[in-house]
Image 1: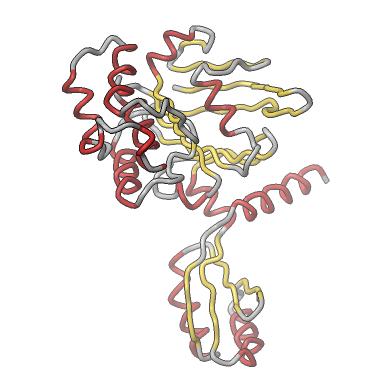
Image 2 (image 1 turned 45 degrees about the vertical axis):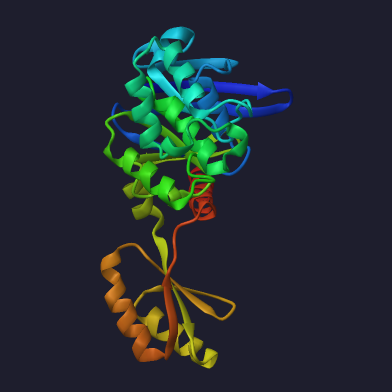
Length: 301
């Protein structure tokens, strides 16, 4: 559905994208993850035909990106920070977007506005909207023409809990092809089928989410003890079981690859020390960068 080959984009001396390759299968949700200035937004703007690449090939549903009008009929785009005329209303903006796609049916506009929780404020000016409400307007505008492809640039940022739940439900139930960006790996877990991690415009890793989890493992537990003097004993007992253990401050961090290991780890830890608190931890972007950067160095060596 989305095929990107050797994509490059510069802004002056800044090389925003470096020979980027990406393949998103039809009907899947693909995450584009990375810190600020990693190139995520640039990829989406190019796919939305808001920006031209310097070189490379981009195809959506077998249509080259240079055929702008045909591409725009296929995609719905939500920018990271939507900007609207302050005296406009949600109904006006969604109606305008619908008309640009030849849609005159008011019931379609009404349905999308209601779906995004904007029904009660649809005729109020945008100047009175919260950040979450503005983001919902942008999502409604992106969905009104029922596109085959959704391009979502950090859509969860700024959403209130109700809107966030609604968006996640939409992403998990739709059959659209979706490319979604975020800075946090964990925000997209349970949503994406696969992910591409970017750094400085280049791909660090491109794989299925489950495969990345298996390869990196994850810091599963953070343990805090009533008596910090028991930390050394705890480490000794866990390492006897070949458990990966590190210490940070007054916490003991335990890494594992399979959740089936947790009961055994807890039993060993409880027999070795008096546990005050145990909480689960999640994988971080830094862990991904560290793991695959070291792997690349080893391959070169």
